[in-house]
Image (cartoon, rainbow, N blue to C red; front, top):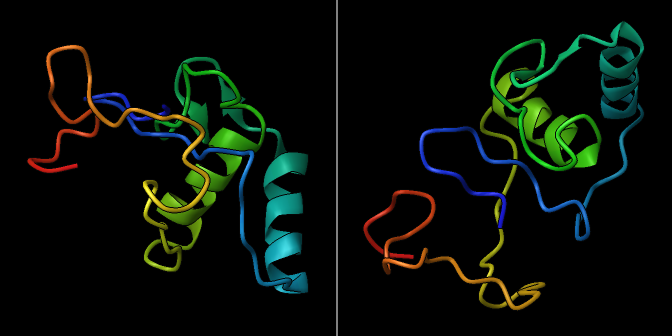
Length: 102
């Protein structure tokens, strides 16, 4: 589970559904070529860092859809699509993302 209270969550890199776009590809390529990934604070230092895969697809995709193209991603219901035995609640029974219901 990449959700971590108080920090920006990464993207589960094992399951992505995408619509091919050369424009988006070029934007990703430019981010990678710029290489501004900072240890602990992620791409451009904006908060997607400090977790497994933050420098790779998990952090890059999250950074792109949170900062480069906000509001353009759709999150699928994790209980239906690619669950991977994920538990959305912590040991205390609280939602890992801080939501009231998960």
